[in-house]
Amino acid sequence: MARILGIETSCDETGIAIYDGEHGLLSHALHSQIALHNLYGGVVPELASRDHVKRIIPLINNCFAQAQIDKSTIDAIAYTAGPGLNGALLVGASIANGLGFCLDKPVIPIHHLEGHLLSPLLGQHKPQPPFIALLASGGHSQIIMVEKIGKYRLLGDTLDDAAGEAFDKTAKLLGLPYPGGSHIAALAKQGIDAYKLPRPMLHSNDLNFSFSGLKTAVSILIDKIKIKQELTLEIKHNIAKSIEEAITDVLVKKSMLAIKKIGINRLVISGGVSANLTLRDKLNKIENIEVFYPPQNLCTDNGAMIALAGHTRYLAATYNYSFVVNPRWQLSEL
Ligand code: KG4
Ligand code: ZN
Image 1: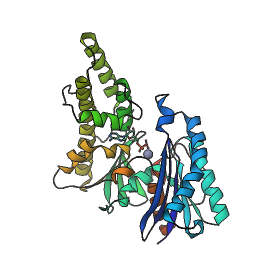
Image 2: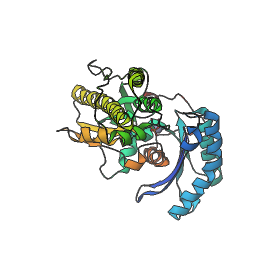
Image 3: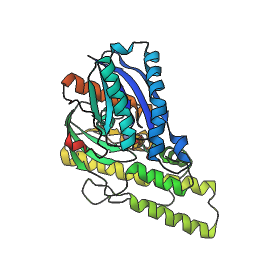
Image 4: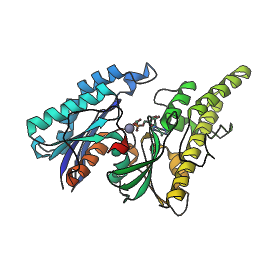
């Protein structure tokens, strides 16, 4: 057992957490930069880096205060080394290494997607490998075979936009704030699937995704409606529901295809889109499979998943000290 400080700064969230092998998550703190970037309709990398610099030390202090432990009691520091925004990653890497040097503790570089993949282990219902994982976030839509922790095989990927990106881009067309996934989900609650949007690559019989056509379909649909009438709230509810149904149908169908092809019926869903309750409902209704999710508040980026991945690597001694960041790090390179 060990106690690990986790640092996540790959994009627009500064996430810090302390995970203890015996007692679980001792504390976690998060600062989201959503309000900062909202003005620009997406993440501005330089602003992201600067904000991480401002937030990271107070958040670390806050985590130790919450956990009521001294910094010297941790065994190691884990930080997100990639993939992500170069400048943002460098902030986390620098603080992790500086702190590691001062406290004389090992520093463990973590792959951001491994953090997401292992995040269901932070919940009550913990998956045991081997399992199939659907990783659906703002930057990735991947189906991964997890043979054991640390051994990952990519089975399917997106050919263009990621699932979260599809939520974000279609939300923008509806005039919703960034990131749009949770806003679409909120509107969809009162809507019906009235527009039957395309389900891209639903019948391609492979495990790849393509979501960019959905954005075009929604754009054409909105233009057509606007010729005849205003976009009323009711129409927006129905468009949001149609978007949610189209994206979640594809995610469910591809996950089921992976289960059939590989012959393993344990499925892990992670990444920001795993917070979507319609997706969870659809998967929970399928018989003869076991589905695992991260706790609802740990689906999007956070420090807890990095601390947990660090804990796993620390115990297995499967990490190499490095003060590098890799903005385009592939999970299969682990
Ligand atoms: O994992 P994450 O925090 O960041 C990346 O690593 O990309 O995922 C963020 C993505 C965004 O695209 C956001 O719109 C989406 O997760 N998201 C959702 C929901 N909550 C967040 N998508 C659908 N339904 C939600 N409830
Ligand atoms: Zn993420």
